[in-house]
Image 1 (cartoon, helix red, strand yellow):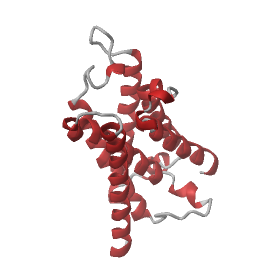
Image 2: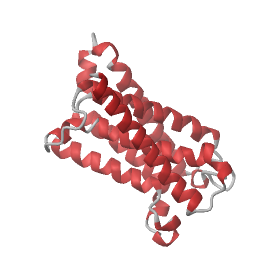
Image 3: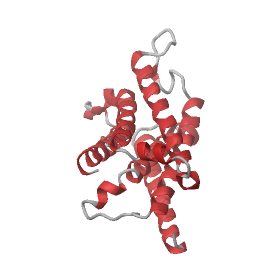
Image 4: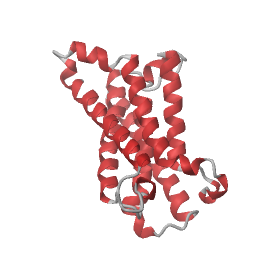
Length: 212
């Protein structure tokens, strides 16, 4: 990757992070009245998660996008940069989420007695499995995948990609579906970030299903 292309990719990544964070601020602070004290962890985490899922979905959808004549960051290095950025943001999302994993911030994850709810268990399991798959995917391509040819073939297979996107979708669905259809409760009329993220994943899933 040339310095110019690398700079363009970094600029694109930064733009996605800024737009995702700005949407979170607009929806939760400006329209939703959430106290600004919650920005460093709770609200920032919303923006980080949206940026992460967008970059990851784009990274693993570059090949099917090219079949539609959309050659965005089609080089191996460009794809890798998007994937690494998505993984790092996912790690940050996991860390921030664990800091506030309690009924005050994630009520749908817990029963009245403080134990995990069924929804919470499914969402966290899907999130944990997809995170492990991402780490394996990233580590496998270190050193160009030398000596890991069979594993590389599996990780770039249609089944693996669709399974990863499916787990993303399950994690998001069980986390936020209760807010998706009550448009009257949308803060400032803006769709929940879980819904926006789910739509991104759904588009990626359909694209990889039919064009990969």
